Structures are given as structure tokens and as C-alpha cells.
Length: 182
Image 1 (cartoon, one colour):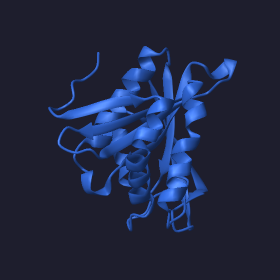
Image 2 (cartoon, helix red, strand yellow):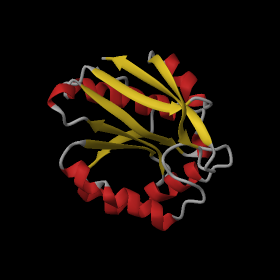
Image 3 (cartoon, rainbow, N blue to C red):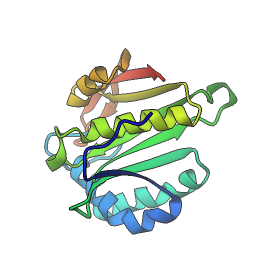
Image 4 (cartoon, rainbow, N blue to C red):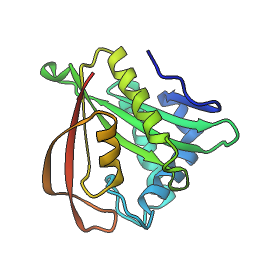
């Protein structure tokens, strides 16, 4: 059963046809996260332009249409802007259909430490369970507050890979991998 959201918050699953309507807000969110001075490791180098961010979101449409990617946004009723987003990537291999990967958990820098990431994670875990997934995996930069949040949510840390990715400024960073049985 889904945990109810606090009053005023809404989580919406976007379809491919919803992307154009939300692309500006999604792009702004992505740029805020990548260009945040505290750093990020989400697959983009800073400075990220709105044009490049828009291209990224637009390119997701085919994966969303084919249902190998599910995209969720979190909004608050007094703001038209997206406060956070998360994606669930389905692994389309016969031997991996029991699991999926959580990717691109993004929260606006000015909205962090308010439970938004937690709401999105609980939602995506329940969605994955309802769609037949038994296990989720994810990775995050080792030196990030997200690592502690995942532990608090019951995710099991199963390893760290040295120099696995890069921060937005291009310097290498370690990544820590997590899994959670649903």
C-alpha cells in the first residue's frame, strides 16, 4: 500500500506525450542539479545548458513509450515548477525481469532536506513492486548525502567502485552500489 503524501504534494507518472509540456521545468531542474556548486554525479558536466538538458529529456520519449523507462515528477500545488523527479529503468533481459534500476533521482537544490527524495523513493519502490519487480538497484556518488538517505530507507550497500564516474566538474569520484528486495 502506498504511503500517503503530505498535503499539497503530487507525484505524477509522465508519458512520452507529457514530456513537451514539462520539458522546460525538467530542464531547469536538471541544470540546477548539475550546475549546483555542491556538485553532482548524474551523467552531465557543468555548465549544462538548458538546450542540452532539453535534448536529454526529449530523447527519453522512446524509452518511455516502450515502457523500459518510467519517469515520475513531484510537484507542490502552489508552484508550477517540478521539485523532484526519479526514473525507473527496466532491464529488458529475460534473466533480469525480476529487477529494475532507479536512476536520476533529482531534487531542486532549494527544496532539499524536506523529504522530497524520500517521497519519490517510496513511491518508485511501490510502483516497482506493483509492476512485478522483486529487487531494485541503484548507484550514487560515495561522498554524497544521498548515500545516508538510501541506508535510512532500508537499502543495502553492496559495494564501492573506485573512480567509477565523474563529478560535474570532471573530477573522478567513487560510486557506491545499493540493492533493495521488495
